[in-house]
Length: 391
Image (cartoon, rainbow, N blue to C red; front, side, top):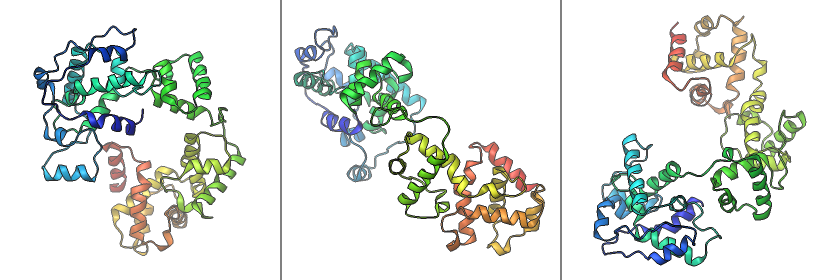
């Protein structure tokens, strides 16, 4: 079930009920068919339940909904604090305690836990009356507000989506046997792209089923081509990219983000998954188009990163002010100044519309977009280039 469905389903169920709530035991038992032995009516849902329910102003004013303009205004008007970073260890302990407390109070079985976390709640395997009973249970038990207790600066959406990832016990595709995966392919032909319905058959994550199928099979149920790319595939892909980007010079798009690879794949009629198409561009084709294979004196990618770092740190006012004598001393593997400058020209040509940009704009672009690909994300990588610069 997608986030939009969850939002529509649960938005109505977050108001704090100030009166006594009597849970309908018969409806709950109908929801679980005759196979379930859980009894969810033995937990006190009257005033004693209020001690488990969050009374945070954030949760009262903003129920289950994503933060939009309206919610941002509410936050501003009421001086609320909203934390959006990763849950801390302490917060996860609170969330875990809330989840376990709720499951203990209502003696939730695994099926109930799965549906509390928003998986398969609207399955066709359940009648309209059974789904209504489940909604009543969610509302009467004040599940979301109990889950949010002790987390006053986290939105209910943030709390719930974190719980979905942390507490679900659904299987991944890797947990299924070859026979079960073959059966999933048969179900795909039977049910189409109703992934939740397919995933429920084996109690596995719908996203896992979707990812598996889209990685290995096309829309016709035929397996994607694997292995080494052919020259014909590369040519067709580049031709399609020129059509999609409306240009004859793809070199200007070496660093372009959000390229519509699905459209490129469809136009080129390449039988490859989207991941493979995107990787082919990012890891191979764009660098070939940049003509870095023409860099002289066995110039490496690391040399490129070091040159960009040095030019950025020296902060020359324009290209004519570059002291190439100083730069050349740092690159002993380069045979001549002309070779060094030819390499520099090939590098700067990868910047979109470099002819109309100033030297400072070119260096800033390369520093922000190209250099990170060759730097380690930790401090040691930066120290290595700093040492090179100071040497």
